[in-house]
Amino acid sequence: MPKPVETLENELRSMARESGASDLRFIKPSEVITAHWVRLKCQFGCKNYGTRYTCPPHSPTPEATRQVLDEYSKAYLIKYEGFLGFDEYPPKRLPDAMDELSLHVCKAAFDMERHAFLSGYYKAFSYGAHRCRKCDVCEVVQGGKGCRFPKDTRPSLESAGIDVFQTAKNAGMYTEVVQDKEIMKPEQLPTFTLLLVE
Image (cartoon, rainbow, N blue to C red; front, side):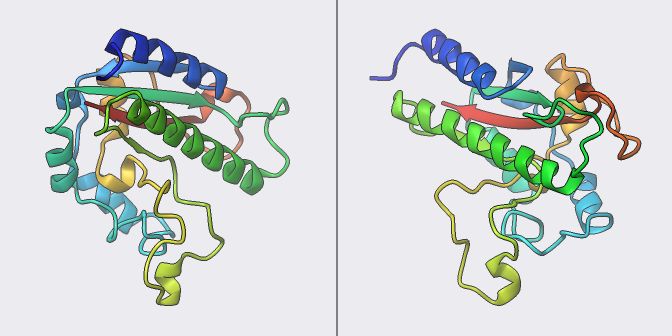
């Protein structure tokens, strides 16, 4: 029997806070917005398009993501700000900082998914953040047979066709476009992940 959802929510909130998240908010899955233009931004604007199993065209389409979202009644949008563990802005090693941030946030999201699963919510599923950084070169570009880490690798919200800006707004979270790489304070670089629970 699943533990009470209120208990799970409190535990997820604690896990998010301990992992460095600045916010965790309940959002109805119907308020998580999917859109075709999001995938276009990946295809025509991101140098990682097609280079990861978690990126388009290999990641779920907006239609597939919408179908998945419609199978859930609870979702939690989780926000991180800035580069975790960095006290100096802008970070001197921006690529390394992005790698560490992405890996940390993806692991935290998966840990929350696993916790919900073990709490009796067997449909729990999380989305990652940014492009996958587990491998320097993904098997997809080497003609491999699949991801080396399929158990805990997840597509990002954007790669699954989720409009992060409108979804964040729907959850009551403020975000705006990052205008340049001179990140002078944590709130200038928000990172979002999503946990679905049923």
